Length: 89
Image (tube, rainbow, N blue to C red; front, side, top):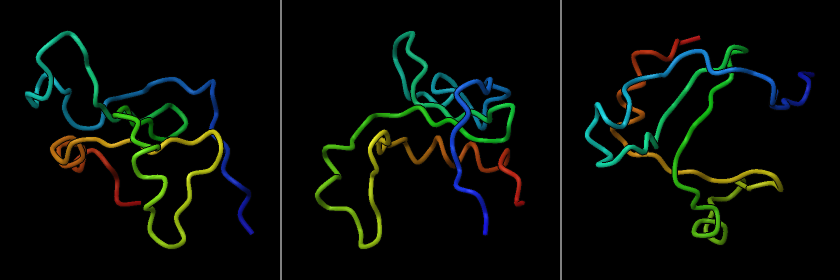
């Protein structure tokens, strides 16, 4: 049985997956949100809007948001731009 996954808070940002919000035309200021980054340990960090409270009462069957977790939403264009950078395995 696989060990339970735990995030490593010491992992560093290794590379952006996809394009920045500026490149995608999703921001008008100096803010760089939303974004997707691969960490140096292979995990992925997603920067988006925290909509945990908005979705908490209407999650699909079998889906939960545990204490310490948040549901973040990113634009479709952000994940599509990252697709080429995400390995198949």
